[in-house]
Image (cartoon, rainbow, N blue to C red):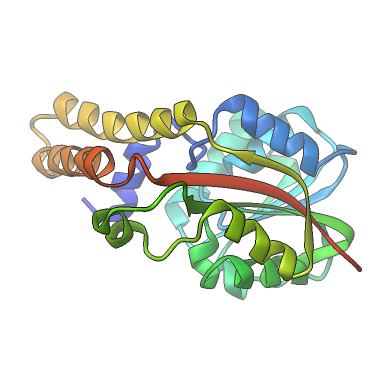
Length: 245
């Protein structure tokens, strides 16, 4: 079973692929979409869950998503049809860094996908290129909540702390107008959901040739979280506007 298939199973019960609960997602969308008729773009949208949730209560939005995964986009299209919002959603299969549009967007989303651009500041530069005057960016990024263990650094790399992360955003010419730091409950719920979904799938499909691999992955990732990064990993989402247009 490949990495994409494992990810799909892991997020079956947590389609927002970040440590955020439903209320947090709703508040972030409210801050990013104050009118309800905006043009919104998600760079690295996966199954487009952010866009689908935005469209669920804002029927006048125009939403576009970009992702390299054919499987994820197919599921997004299926979900959009099931929720009756497919006429308002346009999906593009390509690398987010290569996407271009003839019209700008009022909100650009990139939550948990800054790796696609090589980091936080390059992601903001890409988002700015798609943003309409007066527009906003909703970005989500990992940070170290306290000094990490060597195992945590090996997993996530050289993250900054929260203050440094925000300082980098401000130094790049952005002003946070809303922010959310994932709580311990959100962080734990996300990890339990991911590795629990994997483990449950393996136990429910004992005859599948991939069952042993999936269960091993679930056990290894749960252990990696509990012993490696649970006490040091943090996640922040920021709604940003340009300090000067």
